[in-house]
Amino acid sequence: MTVFYIPQDTTALALGADKVAEALLDAGSQRNQSIELVRNGSRGLFWLEPLLEVDTDRGRIAFGPVSAQDIACILDSLSTDPSSHPLYLGVVDDIPYLASQQRLTFARAGRGDPLSLENYIGLNGYQGLHNALQITDQQIVDQVRESGLRGRGGAAFPAGIKWQTVLDSPSDQKYIVCNADEGDSGTFADRLLMEADPYQLIEGITIAGLAVGATQGYIYLRSEYPLAHSLLNKAIAKARRAGYLGADIQGSGKTFNLEVRLGAGAYICGEETALLESLEGKRGVVRAKPPLPAVEGLFGKPTVVNNVLTLAAVCTVLEQGAEAYKDFGTGNSRGTLAIQLAGNIKRGGLIELAFGTTLREVVEDYGQGTYSGRPIRAIQVGGPLGAFMPESQWDTPLDYEAFTAVEAMLGHGGIVVFDDTVDMSEQAQFSMQFCAIESCGKCTPCRIGAVRGVEVIERIVANQDRDNNIILLRDLCDTMEYGSLCAMGGMTAYPVRSALDHFAEDFQRSGPDKAGDN
Image (cartoon, rainbow, N blue to C red):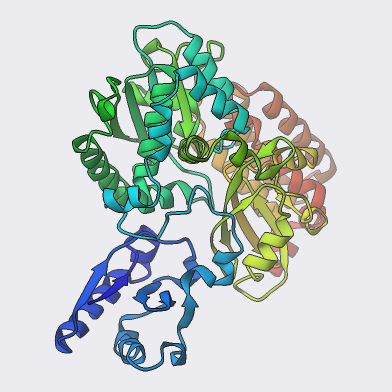
């Protein structure tokens, strides 16, 4: 029997993976060929999806991107010379795009059925939890702190310090909340991990519960992720039946329960306090801090709020040790970064590398330039609140401090590429529009400032008292940055200022001229 693998994640399905799977099974039936089909998770090489993998004597080989019409000739080639097929990619692990990465968090992605607990355990899954059960809660927190792990959701706050605060806060009830409300433009790493390796997230959340004395956890999941929702619920049920959740976890006497809750469909609910409001059944509005969620969080109780990738990385830290994890990275940015390459890019996908690689290396070596074939003009890193970076900044290392030094941010690791046809004044205006639409409305600088920002940019591009309106726009950015209650309004200034600073010519053309250029 020959084992084939076809991904079942959202991206692969959108590109026709189900039709490829159906064609494979039909072809096998017609040829009386014994076929086992495993619907795995994507490895994140989205420019090669649907990716068909096959177990052979040489190891697992791949073909891609595959359509249903390619199946017959691929099966023919497998009986003769697979390398003769034009879609042949060789041994999967040797594909340069994949082989040059340092995969820790995504090491298991694509290697098997994401709902197979046996597959997960066979790939060292739950070893981190096993190790955590052998030590004290304080020792677990110490491991996370010593690893240098920082929040991967964008704020980059040291995870160990947050956990220590919750551990030290006396309470009859504590909670773990996983922020899976992935809403930044160009980001998909959370979704990919939940669809390709859901047990890793479940394990990481459970370890967090043991570390701080929490007995209940929630995954606050973006409502637009129905496949991840289904897979997580099934994986949680299997983990509970196997004794990895619930009462007396693996005979330890420890209890931890986990549920998935769907988000409210609002970008602002990615902010941790608005998320907690939504999770409590209220409108997603930002809370004033202090008190911090680590002291008074969900239902007023001490709460760890961490991103999907942060909690998943905890498994690696507890499995391999703090020092092993800390060996990756540079400066105060330790471990690996899940880079999501999107936008006008030739080879988009998930890239996991140690901190320190430059933005240029990622976009040029992995992305291979723009999909349109035109020169790259601007790159936005960190989602819709991230700065637009000109070529003079592309050699900036991907680490938190280096990006801060150039008034940019890594955020969740999303990279969106624009070619030379982009109008940066339109992108700046979009940033203000986005803030105006997604603001929770609680604070004036964000609620009113974003609306005024759209109007001011409209006047600038229409050449209405341009110089004074540019001064006004910069003053408005300062007000929003320093006066907003949270990063929604505070960081909207980043893309607008960067567009003004680095692409000033796009604001200098008159209204009629701009229309003619388009």
